[in-house]
Image 1 (tube, rainbow, N blue to C red):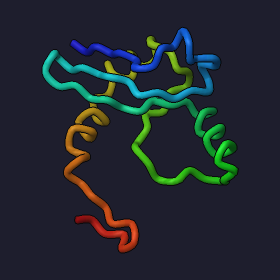
Image 2 (cartoon, rainbow, N blue to C red):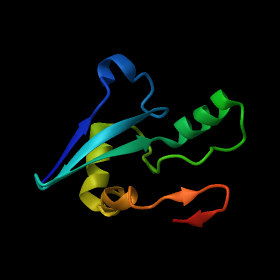
Image 3 (cartoon, rainbow, N blue to C red):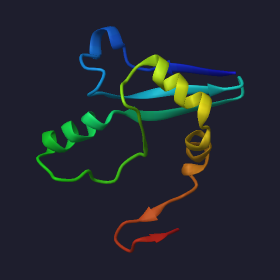
Image 4 (cartoon, one colour):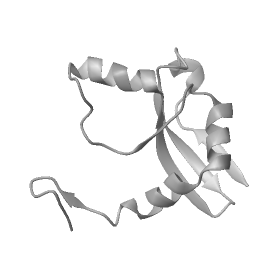
Length: 103
């Protein structure tokens, strides 16, 4: 069973379901828990506009959804566990930016 909990208070914070991002806690089968960043395409553009850049700098991977709703996030989690597995092992990978090499 997959449980999804959005970590922000959406009643307070969410103003546009098509322009939003948040950390989301996903629990798989009561055993593994992952915190993942979920964003909308419009939010990616807003982040670039806020930074006055034509690109996004590297950061934590994001799962992209059309609209930020509980239903869509649950639909994604029910269909693809790939990112959750990747998040579980991501801390083992370190990249040196200056050398573009893996440690």
